[in-house]
Length: 397
Ligand code: SF4
Image (cartoon, rainbow, N blue to C red; front, side, top):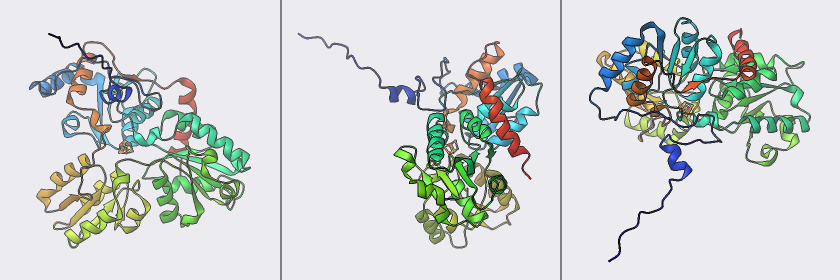
């Protein structure tokens, strides 16, 4: 009789990463979540989160990004987009612990903008952002070499979206550029084009979201699609010739949001056919053809304000992350506003969704026991230059 031998099967690095148990050297996010997490089925999770938060009192300040799950948002002291939350954290200098329910780059920005004695914590270190991961410090340094070789680097002003790693923000600060959000991208581009000696020859390197860069340049600044080229970090010289770089006004990094990038022209046409009279409102991280076909375009905060101001009986199809759209649909249903998700398929931000109640409970209970877990800390030099770029944004006219 033979006995079954245990299989010598090792989990792959990808499987470990998906389980939140391993490092991803190519990622802007952290490594593993070392915690001994409570089971998601634990019926006392809500009570445990409440008790730990109450024990911490004023020492803790919990930030909840708009795209977080309801079970997490319930414990947020404030909600908002990434920049608003970083500023909210900076306005609470007495909070020793800032628990950032969002993704890695957001926690980094909060660390940059808060005091040295405040500790920023990300409940799951594997909560990264696929868009931020699309531009690494090495790739961007290589891009700058390509621009230098083409003889255009001294005409280029970098503008980086808030959704980028601290390294990319620092690169931007070092090279005279600014950060932008989806609310102030137009002002940031106007500012950048005014920085060079000659506006006609000044170029912008826009990182890492090609769609926000293109949509802002074409819709708001009146540039043409031909003024934009896409730099692909996976191709030699970004896949561009020196002539193409010299002719371009906007050099767009080939990055995108995996959530907003899913919406298509078909989603817009379908919803218009299904719901006569529907208003299509999308985020500027969507593709250009989607933005061009929409009725309204704006940041998360703009979307919320537009729905607040909408008349009863109006119908809306929203092109942004599903957790937020669902919450808005529930919030405005009693006012007779019909709000649907723009696409027919489910579209959560999977990395945002990594922060769940078990991670939050583990984080709060650890802090209440005096143990700081999952701290996000940006090194001094990176912080210095990243802050420079953030301060230029704050000073935008
Ligand atoms: S929604 Fe998009 S940009 Fe925002 S965190 Fe998720 S992947 Fe990143």
